[in-house]
Length: 258
Image (spheres, rainbow, N blue to C red):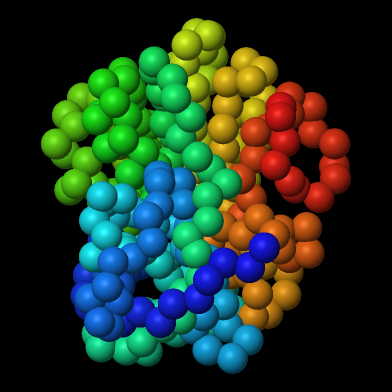
């Protein structure tokens, strides 16, 4: 089913980290935007044959604006370059959605893991878990501290957030997060494939929920990390939400009970 398309205006551009641009989008007539829940994404039409998908990473209670964040890809096919270099405040973009294939399920406790731009769908989940009174923690890794988006917003959560810049501390140690997960706890993980593969190998069956970031196989459809696309994922190798299976089948990525 095709999501309705809306023309929105870029209200604000702000660097969320080195190489990560946050955009605030509003309706040109200040109408309320569709409701969304943590984990949702939108399809952004940047031009003829240029369409990308981005997680909503603002406040779901704010009906007046949507926020997305775009990683500048070195080897991208034009989407991130267009956003960073050409899209200006006041410009209009066509947006479809929101859609959600990475929903935050009810649980007493959560363990969140984010790698790089994978923080974007996780960010509103933290606020939702906080509001629900659930216990939670976040393990957030990136190549450099300067390149890790929204760290300033995460400061208010104190010791529940662990930042692991690889250049300073090495790679993420998933052991404390994915090993021995209690039955009342869900693990939510978003980021590059190797991170999710490692989590899937170690996390107990039924406890892991992931959204996979993977590069496109064709131009003008699905870009590199930072865009979810479930409908097109078998065709272009897009970012894919999954409930990972303990054993990998080698089939095209799809949403699985795993």
